[in-house]
Image (cartoon, rainbow over all chains, first blue to last red; front, side, top):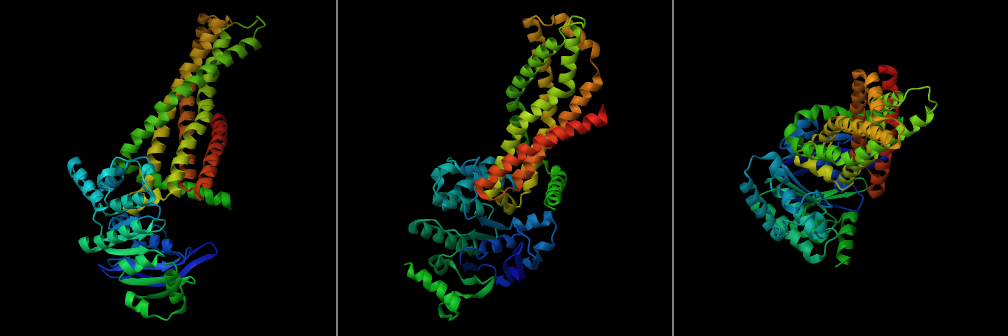
Length: 244
Length: 245
């Protein structure tokens, strides 16, 4: 379980958000929505301690990650798979090696076992034929899918997706949504999806957190969001509907 | 205030590097790659710099001592000692601040702005151990080797040009070189090359690792890494000369 308690963050004089409280139960999929620049990705990077807050705590399975030393923080991070907005593939190695990377550093699997796992992971994202391609030879959608294959290769307990469908055509975006659902259902992972794509939210999420005006403006289930009359949230959701 | 902040971050990066230098499994593969990139790949440019430095120094020294009162062996002594004490360490270091320093700063800067360093950390890998430590070790290990290459080619170039131009007979050049040779000067050259290797790689790692601001930021970091490394190399050269000679 992930618990965020009273978290605040600013960069210099610029407040990103303050007093954020959130809980993500095991097996749940949480979507964090909000306008561009509201600090969604910043919140994501606090959950696995890539960024340090001004105040507040983040508990991963009961451990406050910010109270742990660096070695233990890294152990906790291994529970997470993270799909970056730009995929963050290592551009000096090919697709296969990108996906195999965590296995080579954190397991003692044989070369044969690594090959089997990598090809299985690439099959999940329909990219088994792209194993030998370099990241520069992949399209944006393919990069995200390779990023996803790398994020799930260690069979993490938690997967975090940073804008998984942004910049993709509707068909590829929907394939990514299907993959998020597949991961959650097949491997029973707890997922956090950062997005401003309401189609994605409605399709994959169990709960929604809405960041607005430098705070967590609203938090609830999908059904509660549909019934909510909170002005900022309804305006944000309605703006998405206009784009259909 | 900004300079103090930079110094603090630089020191912190070095401290983290020192602490994580025990994680050999993390950086083993990168270390061998960096030894090749910093060492082997730099040999051609260092040979070129060495030969031309030795050649020019011989011609200019011969020109300045052409009175006939000073024996030709003095040219051999001046050229070989100047190369061993100063030129074989400093001139390649200034060239490598551009070649090696710029490459490291660009690589790490690009990895930073495209979130590849965050990706390493998010997997639970120590990014300093993975990226910074192998470059520092390779720099410190390979610069003395390159110093030997520059020394040999520098003295050899001077000897050859002295012979071909008729400025210094080979026997006189070697006699002068042997007469004034002191192992302490060689040790001094090695100390310099260790220090320069550390300066160039650590400054480049620091600038690249903390790069920000997209492609423009990476370009800025690379420029700063190169310029700062050159300045610190010259400064360190002066301090070492004042302390050790």
